[in-house]
Amino acid sequence: MKDSSGKDEKRVDQRNSAGKMNARRQPRAEYGHDAPLSYNKYLRVPDLIQLQICLSEPAHHDELLFITVHQTYELWFKQILHELDAAARQIEEDRLFAAVRALRRIIEIEKILLAQLHVLETMTPFGFLEFRDRLKPASGFQSTQFREIEFTSGLKDEGLLACFEEDEFALARLRARLEAPTLGELFFALLRRRGFDAPPDDPTLDETARRQRYRRRVQAVVELLTHHERLPAEFMLAESLIEHDEQFQLWRAHHVRMVERMVGTKRGTGGSEGVNYLRTTLDQKFFPELWEARTHLTLDHAEGSCPFHSTAERRNA
Image (cartoon, rainbow, N blue to C red; front, side):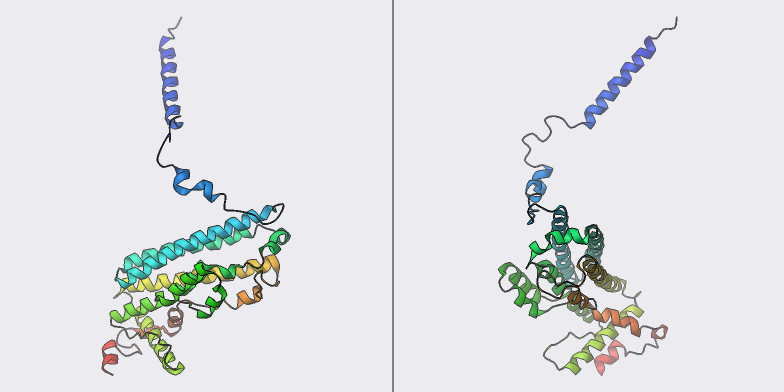
């Protein structure tokens, strides 16, 4: 008869080893006991999950989704503004690689914002109508942080302040953004520091003079795109700015289609023309000079045959 004591001891060792491993995998009973901080405390999860308050009674199934997506948008908007402010500060300080990193993060967030529209599209048109009237007169048009992103990026509209006259929170934030330089203004100030002829816009000038300044800024971008290897950090900054602009435009375009898919051409909950109003925003650009420069870029812009005067010649003109 074979001696099985060796096998028995091996089985015992395996069971003991497995028991120790399971003990390591399972949280101990005293884990977090009287701890000064925990996951739920740090992220304030109990408060966070109480913020989705439905207005429909009884609460319609899709209203929770609608609130969750839009609250998530506002959290991402907060992060975008955080990165925009960092990028603005870094451009002023000539820390261009840091500014590019901030803009790249914004671009990735904007891709998430676009993807969230697909989540909203899982609602049926009828499911949305079940609670839509409860939202009046609130509207996405009133998103303060969305307007802050527009103002900071380059689309300042002082007339919008009238829509927030009764909202002290929004009015103070938008006024501050209105008075601060835009990313585009900071970008062209940077190009001037690099010797480019990129004069700032001046609303006090007549339209002809302002248009001439605009063309000179476009020419400066053409030169940067042509000689990008000489100024790689400035070139990457310009490319990041235009991609931020592009991603925002993609979101606008898809948002229009999503709204039309849900409610057709009904008026907006805030009283606007709904989809017809949203369509008027599709051609808005944060950095029009960056886009127009592509039109004037050709292979003939190589050094020695560039149709624009050199920086030195312009300074002496």
